[in-house]
Length: 96
Image (cartoon, rainbow, N blue to C red; front, top):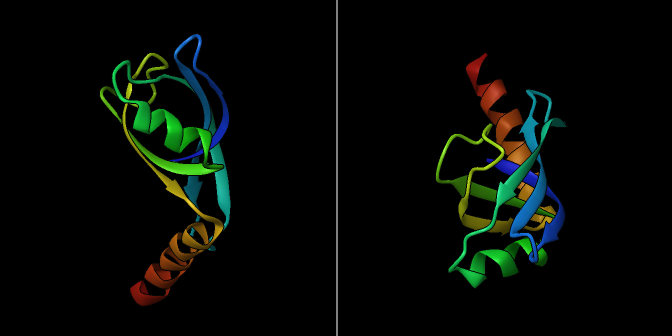
C-alpha cells in the first residue's frame, strides 16, 4: 500500500500515515488517515519511515484496522513516485 508519512511516534510505537491511491490520470488521491503500529523488533522499518515522505508499506493484518502492525516498508523518492504515477497512466492507455 502506498502511504504518505505524516508523523512517527516511536514512544507510542505508532506511525500516522495517509493511505494513497493513484487515479487513471496519474493524480495522487488521499484515501484515508491511518494509525498503524510500528514493529517492536525491527528498527530498519522505523528508520525507513523516519527518512521518507512516502513509502510502500505492508501490514500484518487488514490495512483498514488502525491497530495493524507494519511488517515491511520501502521508502519512495519523488522520482520513484512519479514513475508509479506514469505506470498507471500507461496502463490505462494500453487498455484502450
